[in-house]
Amino acid sequence: MSIYAISCGGTGGHISPGIAIAEELTQRNQKCLLLVSEKTIDGVMLKKYGNFESMTLSAKPFSKNPKKFWQFIKAQARSFFECIKLIRKRNIDCVIGMGGFTSVPIVLAAFVLRKKIVLHESNRIVGKSIRILSHLADMIFLPEGIELNGKFLSQKTIHAPIPLRREMRKINKSEARKILNLSEDGFLLTVLGGSQGAEALNEWAMQNIEKLNSQGVAVCCIRGIKSHGNKLVEGKSSSGETVRNVFLPFCDDMHVLLSATDLLLCRAGAGTIAEAMFFSLPMILVPYPNSADNHQEANAMYAAEKGSAFIIHQDNIELLAGVILESFKKNLKNFKIDRVSSKKGPDVKIIVDRIQKISRS
Image (cartoon, rainbow, N blue to C red):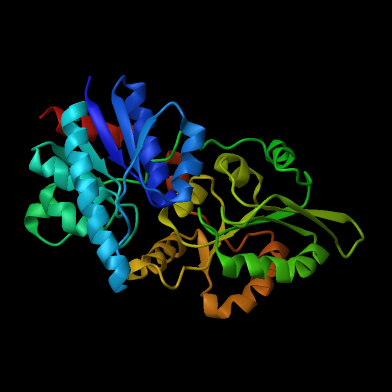
């Protein structure tokens, strides 16, 4: 039995694929330790996966603010020594870095102690952490068509889809809507701002809910973990029927949410896009304009090229209601989803096969 440390903290986009890999390794009787950050989202998401051992690192994200930059340096240094002790004490065989600021200290510690290192990037633009750490890695997983500069790096690069958690299986739409306290019939627009919410999308949903309801479009809005409590809002369609809308701070049953949905309005996180494509779910993407290296724009472009999404930029958010209503009027026939990938689905087994092979070498 090998022991794996999986660094996956900071965002849902890092945690979800990290959990997917941990699930498959555990199924193969391997031992896994999840390394996460002090961010609230990490703790919220891990509540559902209490069977996995986890450890919180004191690492903090990079900032150009002088005071926060100094805090970043101190926190990363402290985390590095924490990781040195961890690897020695637990006899970690292989470290898997899913990107983000929590990957840096554990990967550096693994390199110093000559442990196997695997990196995984989900986004269409490789993040700073993965770029910096790539030279230390034994294996790097990148999305299809994405490369790192240099022959040396290309030799240890493997192209693979984003691994999905085991729960990502479609259920009956009526059953899913019952779970979410929504009407079983009619069209459902789900507004999803990512693991931490999106204020611009939340505000848009509230401002346009009456207009959407009048056309028989119900709304399920995931507002983000900083919001409080569930909110039920009822409206009326033009025919006088009651339309039930639900506003939730967080949803840890994404397979239920996506199974209930007809159209997804969301940011362009790589994990969300992969899950929606797996469910053959059409999307309207509003890339976060301040994402690092503008990676959400690249993610959105990929989904659009596959025929799975429309892109609307935040500056044009007022056009959303018209686009959504037009989509529903056409019964979503304007979306020609790439069903090849959604039928096959991201196969975490292929990724874990490779990880186990490198950890034994």
